[in-house]
Amino acid sequence: MFDVLVVGGGPVGACLGALLARAAAGARGLSVAVLEPRPPAPLPADAALEARVVALSRASEHLLRSAGAWQGITGPRLSAYERMRIWHESVAPDSEAVLVFDAADVGEPNLGYLVENRLLQGALLEAFTQAGGRLERAPLGSLEITDECVKVHTPAGELAARLLVGADGAQSAVREHTGLTVETCGYRQTAIVATVATARHHQETAWQRFMRDGTLAFLPLADGTSSIVWSADDDLAAGLLGATASGFAQQLDRASDLALGGTRLVSERASFPLRRLAAQRYVAQRVALVGDAAHVVHPLAGQGVNLGLMDAAALAQLVLAAAAEGEDPGALSVLRAYERWRKSEVAVMSAAIDAFDRLLAHGSGPVARVAQRGLSWVNRSQELRRFFIRRALGMSGELPGAARSGCSSDPHFEPLSADSCACT
Image 1 (cartoon, rainbow, N blue to C red):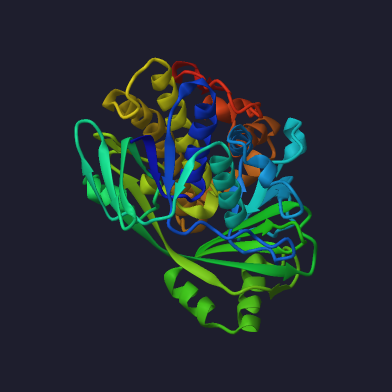
Image 2: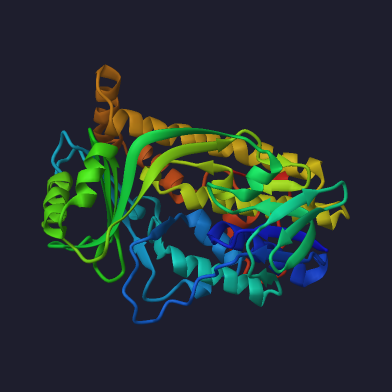
């Protein structure tokens, strides 16, 4: 029997597995497995950059160092971004009303990194297996929860664990089998993701424009191209996806107001519908949910994966603290502490993101106009800019110890207790 079995080997599940396995390699003695039927194939060194990228905050960077995965991510495919430029369609992209966040204003080398999702997942799974974790290449069939353990049935056989973690995404089978319910709400928007070349260099800057029919972001990649995330109202998105490559580029030029000059598609377009999801409970008897299995937020702030990684770090910290005291890692008291910690943090971020979408991208009326003008007001205040930059870095709120320090190249890092996780 395993102490912890994680269902889902995406970035969040793999991160949780790596944190636990690296600690287990020391004196804690936890046994950890990750159930992932389709681990990613390694990226060839000369492969073109993929359009599906993740924006990692400074807190997530620290966490990935603690998980032993950072060395597998650094290299020519990793792109640091030093600035953000955010503006409403009512002003020009070179206007003084554009809100500019610059890492130099808070003495940081950058605001974060952009990394391909497959590279991130592969590095975390490699860190997990290198630390002695067991990767089970099988899908989840069914599960049975008893007082002593959770029994998981797969086509390859039965597994048992004292704690089962659902890291299997928004359509979580673990959540469904456990009977944990969710609240969902569609945004009536579709996210379009693609890689584009631009006439002007991106300047290691993330560019984001709020419009009445959605939000458009250009994310700077290491080879000089940009990954776009266009969260467009469904009717508009349908036309964009049906357009020719040149027709799409023309629409993109209009939507970007030529902030980076003319654009050209260099990849296929991918799309997915946008919705908000919030599990009413993150935990049940011997079961916990992390990442998209517990919550899905709008992508406009690039916080989805960062929130999930913090879930993983918080749960790992509490499980390891319980193990150090000889407690059962699946004890409901441990899991409820995790739920209280992370549910409140996610709720605050989700509400803020929804307010940005409602007021800046789709808002009308006096309140929305005040919010839209607020971008330029923030830009004129150095203290306000620094406050928001620190939020963008992820270095505020109740952070897990591994996300604060990032100092653990040592696999035997000591997680902090839940009582000492506040970071201001």
